[in-house]
Picture 1 (spheres, rainbow, N blue to C red):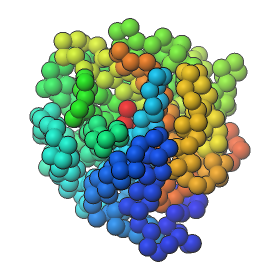
Picture 2: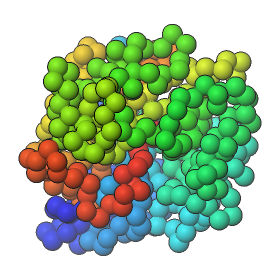
Picture 3: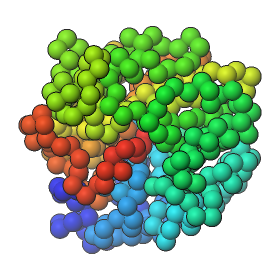
Length: 411
């Protein structure tokens, strides 16, 4: 990763990761109308959950190569907007970041989540039921446990846990997801999932949820807009054309010419052309399939995520796409512009990756919502892409495995 570093020359030697993300959270909370007291309470929880890495000076490199973000900051923010409601602010974090190995990372994450359960008086029973599946003695994969807090007025958030299906090995990921769904009562759910290239995350809603969800996140390599439109398995879900339109706008593909973003029609970037238009050929599109009713085989929610940072030259372009999508759904684009300015004071044109993903979510009984994922960029800013359609958008020090998945995981 190149570009200016928050902890590099010119930064205060006393700057820490905890101080950096606290300032971001306080500004973000103010931007969405949360009270100062609630924001300060949430900031305290965030720093406490990060443990020792929160006190780590930013002049040092990241404590480990966290899979949560491109520059390995173990924190990501997101803003979810839907008609008729105030924007919802979320923070995704890796409580075990900096631990000596993945097994200890998972143990720390479980401890932090259980401390949150005591603090906010909710049960971790669904997570406890699955512990043996996702926390083997010698785990595999790029993560053990992440958690997300949906920050609500009053200082009590909604909580979500994100687990690694490949913890017992990539070849066992599908089997792990199938077993987890069955244990939670969703016995027919696995069969309803669409084809995918990888099972990325298994997620649980914990705490005060009207309808707690079990969620399965999938990766789809070299996907076209037309193919994305076929992936929803909801009964009475969104029209495929809506998914296709979202895909094209988020990825920067011109609907008429089939070109845009950093691609030249998809096939020129090495993807096989199968008559469905330009494809996402770098970091894959992700989908999330949410299950709430154990008596139903089909999911009650569907989300599609486009990794906009790989298909925009800089964050100015990514923000234009975000605001365009918000406008399509009758939402105020100013909320995302305020949020991006709250996270970073740099000009959007000076980097790419502040806006990491754009997501379109449908959940039964709710209007569709647009979510914008914002990177903390505590350690590095990825420079703008060169004006070359064939340029490789992969950051120099991010391994290919990291481009195969990554967040979002806070839908």
